[in-house]
Amino acid sequence: MVSHLHYFDMKLFLAFFFLVVSTAFASPKDTLTVKQMENLNAIRQFKPGFEGATTSGNKYSVYGLKLKRRWTLLVVDSLSIKSFQLNRKTGELSDNTETYTDMIVTSMRAKMIKVKQKRKDLADFTLINYYRMSTKGLRLFQRINSTENKIKRLESQGKKAKGLLEKAKKIKK
Image (cartoon, rainbow, N blue to C red; front, side, top):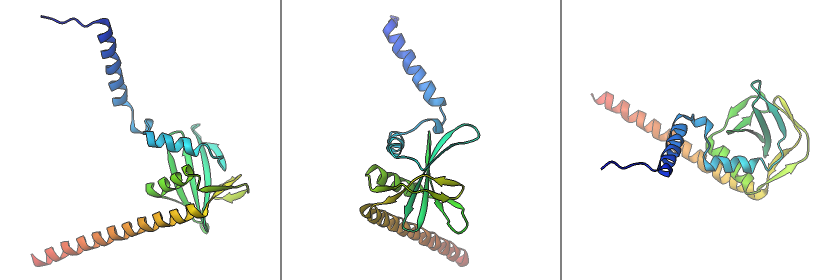
Protein backbone atom coordinates (compact mmCIF):
# COMPACT_ATOMS: atom_id res chain seq x y z
CA MET A 1 0.00 0.00 0.00
CA VAL A 2 1.38 3.40 -0.97
CA SER A 3 1.05 6.10 1.62
CA HIS A 4 0.23 9.54 0.44
CA LEU A 5 1.83 12.59 1.97
CA HIS A 6 -0.65 15.02 3.33
CA TYR A 7 -0.30 18.70 2.61
CA PHE A 8 0.83 19.40 6.18
CA ASP A 9 3.40 16.60 6.12
CA MET A 10 4.79 17.93 2.86
CA LYS A 11 5.13 21.46 4.29
CA LEU A 12 6.87 20.07 7.38
CA PHE A 13 9.23 18.02 5.22
CA LEU A 14 10.09 21.01 3.01
CA ALA A 15 10.65 23.28 6.01
CA PHE A 16 12.98 20.72 7.57
CA PHE A 17 14.77 20.19 4.24
CA PHE A 18 15.41 23.91 3.72
CA LEU A 19 16.59 24.30 7.32
CA VAL A 20 19.12 21.49 6.88
CA VAL A 21 20.31 22.80 3.51
CA SER A 22 20.67 26.39 4.70
CA THR A 23 22.68 25.43 7.80
CA ALA A 24 24.83 22.99 5.85
CA PHE A 25 25.98 25.64 3.40
CA ALA A 26 26.38 28.46 5.90
CA SER A 27 29.99 29.22 6.70
CA PRO A 28 31.04 28.92 10.37
CA LYS A 29 31.83 32.64 10.45
CA ASP A 30 28.23 33.51 9.58
CA THR A 31 26.69 31.62 12.50
CA LEU A 32 27.05 32.47 16.17
CA THR A 33 26.64 30.28 19.20
CA VAL A 34 24.33 31.27 22.02
CA LYS A 35 27.32 32.14 24.23
CA GLN A 36 28.79 34.40 21.54
CA MET A 37 25.45 36.19 21.10
CA GLU A 38 25.13 36.70 24.87
CA ASN A 39 28.68 38.05 25.04
CA LEU A 40 28.09 40.45 22.14
CA ASN A 41 24.87 41.71 23.70
CA ALA A 42 26.54 42.16 27.10
CA ILE A 43 29.41 44.15 25.62
CA ARG A 44 27.14 46.36 23.54
CA GLN A 45 25.54 47.64 26.76
CA PHE A 46 28.78 49.53 27.42
CA LYS A 47 29.77 52.69 25.61
CA PRO A 48 32.67 52.07 23.20
CA GLY A 49 35.73 54.28 23.32
CA PHE A 50 36.03 54.36 19.55
CA GLU A 51 33.78 53.38 16.66
CA GLY A 52 34.77 52.98 13.06
CA ALA A 53 34.28 51.08 9.84
CA THR A 54 36.62 49.06 7.69
CA THR A 55 37.19 49.88 4.04
CA SER A 56 34.63 47.22 3.13
CA GLY A 57 32.03 48.92 5.35
CA ASN A 58 32.00 46.56 8.35
CA LYS A 59 31.34 48.52 11.54
CA TYR A 60 33.43 47.84 14.63
CA SER A 61 33.76 49.18 18.17
CA VAL A 62 36.88 49.42 20.31
CA TYR A 63 36.77 49.23 24.09
CA GLY A 64 39.88 50.16 26.06
CA LEU A 65 40.57 48.36 29.32
CA LYS A 66 43.40 49.38 31.62
CA LEU A 67 44.69 46.63 33.89
CA LYS A 68 47.25 48.21 36.19
CA ARG A 69 49.81 49.48 33.65
CA ARG A 70 48.77 47.25 30.76
CA TRP A 71 46.26 48.19 28.09
CA THR A 72 43.93 45.72 26.47
CA LEU A 73 41.84 46.68 23.47
CA LEU A 74 38.64 44.77 22.87
CA VAL A 75 37.54 44.96 19.23
CA VAL A 76 33.92 44.01 18.60
CA ASP A 77 32.25 43.71 15.21
CA SER A 78 28.96 42.13 14.23
CA LEU A 79 30.26 38.55 14.41
CA SER A 80 33.28 38.40 16.70
CA ILE A 81 35.12 39.64 19.75
CA LYS A 82 38.91 39.91 19.72
CA SER A 83 41.24 41.31 22.34
CA PHE A 84 44.72 42.71 21.83
CA GLN A 85 47.49 43.64 24.24
CA LEU A 86 49.09 47.01 23.55
CA ASN A 87 52.83 47.39 23.92
CA ARG A 88 53.15 51.01 25.05
CA LYS A 89 56.81 51.33 24.05
CA THR A 90 56.51 50.11 20.47
CA GLY A 91 52.80 50.76 19.90
CA GLU A 92 52.32 47.23 18.57
CA LEU A 93 49.26 45.12 19.22
CA SER A 94 49.62 41.44 20.06
CA ASP A 95 46.78 38.95 19.92
CA ASN A 96 45.43 37.65 23.25
CA THR A 97 44.29 34.11 23.90
CA GLU A 98 40.62 33.17 23.74
CA THR A 99 40.65 32.44 27.48
CA TYR A 100 41.91 35.96 28.18
CA THR A 101 39.18 37.45 25.99
CA ASP A 102 36.52 35.32 27.69
CA MET A 103 37.76 36.49 31.10
CA ILE A 104 37.42 40.13 30.08
CA VAL A 105 33.94 39.56 28.67
CA THR A 106 32.92 37.70 31.84
CA SER A 107 34.10 40.59 34.00
CA MET A 108 32.13 43.00 31.82
CA ARG A 109 29.00 40.83 32.14
CA ALA A 110 29.47 40.71 35.94
CA LYS A 111 29.81 44.53 36.02
CA MET A 112 33.33 44.29 37.53
CA ILE A 113 34.57 47.25 35.52
CA LYS A 114 34.27 50.98 35.99
CA VAL A 115 34.15 53.57 33.25
CA LYS A 116 36.63 56.46 33.15
CA GLN A 117 35.33 59.41 31.16
CA LYS A 118 38.76 60.53 30.02
CA ARG A 119 40.30 60.82 26.55
CA LYS A 120 43.25 58.55 25.90
CA ASP A 121 45.47 58.24 22.81
CA LEU A 122 46.34 54.59 22.15
CA ALA A 123 47.88 53.10 19.03
CA ASP A 124 46.09 54.72 16.05
CA PHE A 125 42.94 55.94 17.78
CA THR A 126 41.78 58.28 20.47
CA LEU A 127 39.47 56.65 22.97
CA ILE A 128 36.67 58.85 24.30
CA ASN A 129 36.48 56.75 27.44
CA TYR A 130 38.06 53.60 28.81
CA TYR A 131 37.39 51.05 31.52
CA ARG A 132 39.23 49.88 34.62
CA MET A 133 38.70 46.75 36.64
CA SER A 134 37.17 47.08 40.08
CA THR A 135 39.20 45.70 42.98
CA LYS A 136 37.13 42.52 43.01
CA GLY A 137 37.50 42.12 39.26
CA LEU A 138 41.25 42.73 39.42
CA ARG A 139 41.67 39.96 42.02
CA LEU A 140 39.63 37.57 39.89
CA PHE A 141 41.64 38.50 36.80
CA GLN A 142 44.95 37.89 38.58
CA ARG A 143 43.81 34.45 39.78
CA ILE A 144 42.63 33.37 36.36
CA ASN A 145 45.70 34.80 34.64
CA SER A 146 48.10 33.06 37.05
CA THR A 147 46.26 29.76 36.53
CA GLU A 148 46.50 30.17 32.76
CA ASN A 149 50.24 30.94 33.03
CA LYS A 150 50.78 27.82 35.18
CA ILE A 151 48.97 25.69 32.60
CA LYS A 152 51.11 27.13 29.79
CA ARG A 153 54.28 26.47 31.81
CA LEU A 154 53.23 22.86 32.48
CA GLU A 155 52.41 22.35 28.80
CA SER A 156 55.83 23.67 27.76
CA GLN A 157 57.54 21.43 30.35
CA GLY A 158 55.58 18.48 28.98
CA LYS A 159 56.73 19.28 25.45
CA LYS A 160 60.35 19.53 26.63
CA ALA A 161 60.07 16.21 28.47
CA LYS A 162 58.51 14.58 25.41
CA GLY A 163 61.37 15.91 23.26
CA LEU A 164 63.96 14.57 25.71
CA LEU A 165 62.30 11.15 25.72
CA GLU A 166 62.33 11.04 21.94
CA LYS A 167 66.03 11.97 21.88
CA ALA A 168 66.80 9.27 24.46
CA LYS A 169 64.97 6.67 22.36
CA LYS A 170 66.98 7.69 19.29
CA ILE A 171 70.25 7.39 21.22
CA LYS A 172 69.35 3.87 22.47
CA LYS A 173 68.73 2.70 18.90
